[in-house]
Structures are given as C-alpha cells and as structure tokens.
Image 1: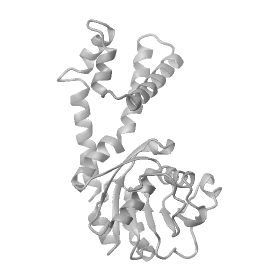
Image 2 (image 1 turned 180 degrees about the horizontal axis):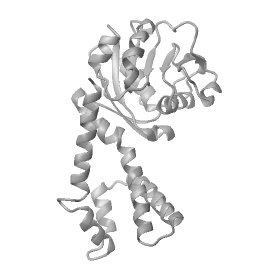
Image 3 (image 1 turned 60 degrees about the horizontal axis):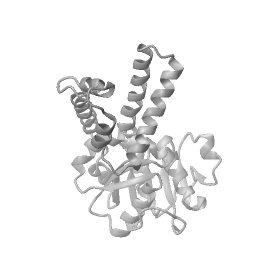
Image 4 (image 1 turned 90 degrees about the vertical axis):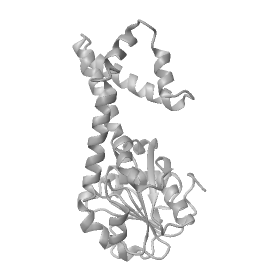
Length: 273
C-alpha cells in the first residue's frame, strides 16, 4: 500500500467539505504532495483568505459528480444537515472520509447510502504535518478506496487503521483531544514556575521549550517514555521529589488522566446520538 507521498496521479475530483483549521491543514498537505488544485473542490460557506488564495474550486455552482473522495471536515453538530446533501457527489467508486468526532459509520451509511465510507480521527499537529490519524472502514471500502483514503490522511502525518469501530471513542479521547492536554501541561508548568519565583516570560519560555524539546526527543528516540523518564531521574534528586507527587497512586497524574480520558470518551459516545 502507498502510505504517503505524491498525489499527482489522482485524476478525479477530491471534494473537501469544511475548510476550518483541520480541513485547511489537510488541503495544504494535499497540495504540498502534488495534488493538482484543479482536482480539488472545496465546499465552505465562509472560506478564509488563505483558502481563497489557492487555485482550488470553492463552492462550485454545480456539484462535482462521481468524486474520487469526499472528505467531510464539518463540525459534528451540523452533520445531520450537511452530510445527506453530499450523496449526489458519490459515484460507485467514491470513498467518503469523515473526520467528524463521534459520527459513526452507521450514521454515515444512513446519510450516504451504498457508499464506501471511512471514519477517521486526526489531531491538530496535522497543521505542521505531525498529526496522527486513526481510521476505520465500512464493509464497502475496497483496497483501492482504502489506499486513496490512506494517502489523503497521510498528507498530514501518520495513519493507523483499526477494524473495531468501538475503539474510536477512546482514540478521540487520547489522540484527538490529546494535544490540548499537552498544551495544558505547558500552561501548568508556566504557572508553577511563576509560583516558584520565576519571571512570567522566563517561566513561559522554559515551559514551552521543555515540552516541545521533550516531545521531539520522545519522537526521535528508540527508547520508550518510561525509560526516558527514568534516565532523567536520579535517586534522591529534584526530579524524584517532583515525580513522587506526580506519580502518587491516589492523586497523581495517572488517576487524573484516567478520569479525563473517561470523560472525553463518554462525550464522544454522546456526540454519536
């Protein structure tokens, strides 16, 4: 299977429905990988100046018929109004790829009858090509449609495929919402640094660079997170003192994150209706 790279061989229209932050990130990724702008139709009622500046078709007067793929990047709250209207663009070989949180394969199959559909969950590092997306196909997706969906999703980072759709709610909670948890860590480090006496600007810079640098080290290292943590921790040292608080079995980060992930997972299920 082709996993990423050039998209210049795509000869049929790719329809992007919704050009907000995530949709725009995907669009930029496709263009960077050689997809012809003339092969892209964007449906977005309020396109930003960055989208208008591209040589793509925006809100075409006539709906593209028999698109190669329809990528649905609207908010799940409007899915009931938007998605059924896309059926007229789906031909026998079209694959619909949804990145709407909580919207199930069953919902997509009902809104787009007899269409191959993929439910996917990306995350915001897609904006810099460092996202991670998890995808699950319905039974109508054949090998070529899955390959196309993979290539479109891989334009913004790594892609993992699963067969059990029930996992998608937890995926949403861990990686879909996960960047917010990391940003909160940087915020908390900043506030804690200020409380410890650091000037606010210095505390913010130390927190930002520490989180960013540690993430890059984790990504590039062959060692797992636990080993990297242990390598920083000297017995009886300052890090050990801090970790004793953070790793407390009752009030530390593990039980706190477990509750947070459970709450996000439940919300993802609730969005399914």
